[in-house]
Length: 123
Image (tube, rainbow, N blue to C red):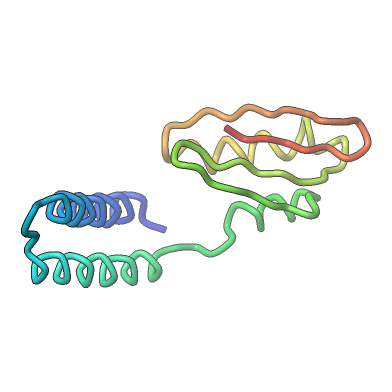
């Protein structure tokens, strides 16, 4: 994946989306402009899919022994939950989390829920 191309496409999608939101708030919105910006967003979304590596993070976790990987994304973060072997907590997981999150400048934090089946939260 090309991080700079991804960021550029994401920025363009956001700009088009903000235009749509701004226009929709008007008393007499320009429906043609809104439709054009939505088509632009869809075109850009398809471009992102061409460079997106599907399941890259969860695949790496699986290679390190994680099972039942699940995640949810809010506006500010994505949290991952999984069961992992106990030796993965100190060995395999932190390095894969750091490398996957470093592109966005985020830091990783692990929270262990229990000793038998660990639920980890990466924020």
